[in-house]
Length: 402
Image (cartoon, rainbow, N blue to C red; front, side, top):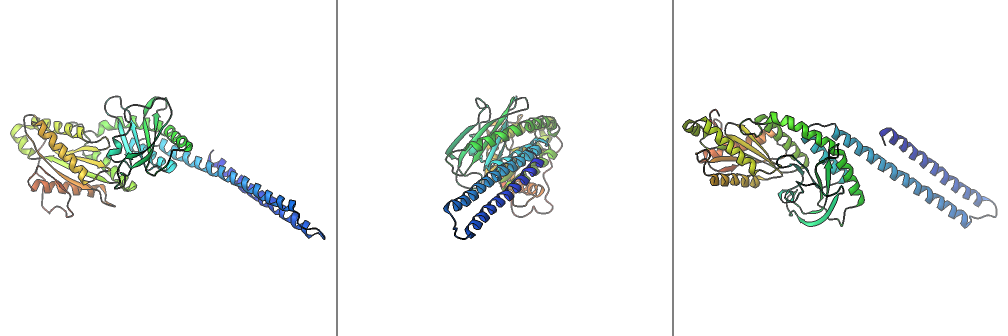
């Protein structure tokens, strides 16, 4: 039903309501006239007739009103799905899909995993912490074409938003316009409920069908655009691409009132390594370090090379302690590796967690200033952001060309 048909339906309901009012008024007037005749009272049959007329018209009015409300909801969903289809950037499509899941199905969390021919799937989440992500069906489509519903009480823990226990879930296959497997859509409710209703499944299937083609187009667009966003040496996002991605994560965190952490790291004494061992060795160290970083981050994290020997990772749904643990895993990997192109290295880090109403630039500056504190405080350590700004005149240790 389009908007014009919906308008006609609204007028039809109004017309019916007017007719129902007229019929009820006529019935009442008829009884009153009969009762006004000399020697005649209000017969029980007349009263019953009025009551049945009123009840019947009210019921028919309610049925038409419910049908109209359902039609209005269908038109709103159609408009939402059309807006999703009009988007090209994959992140924008994913965000619009999550918005629709919240509006249409009132979910508390959701995840979309998109299969890739080579490597790990592309995974986007809304309202999920690590413990829930570990249980996502990421790699294989569901058997058959139906949805898989489940209820449970063991995923998640009580605590900050995004970590409460999940009580119900619904997982569906995603397909492209040619009905080829594309990925998985998982919807989660944190409110206790005995089971998912048939209407929930129908709406979820409608959503999955609507977002399949836009997601496939977004993947193709990202494949082309991603090549231009990569640093040639490390194959991580270059500075401009990382800043754009960070701004998107900041906007998303503010919108959904979720946590976002940022870790900024660089290699200690990298200029001295370059001067002593040469730039080819320096480049090899950066490549190996980027490889270690890529292997340790989650699929939802956003790593990038800011420039020289400086790297950064945005960690959605994460706190300062989560970023600290990632830094410690990096340190452990470096110790086990023992040698980066024949050189032992250490590195320092700065950590920040997004504050209310904070923009991406200020957020990054706080983490970068914390990195300067780590460098000046002895290196080989990660320092959480301080409330103060870095002291004027402090400059980053030059890293030299790479």
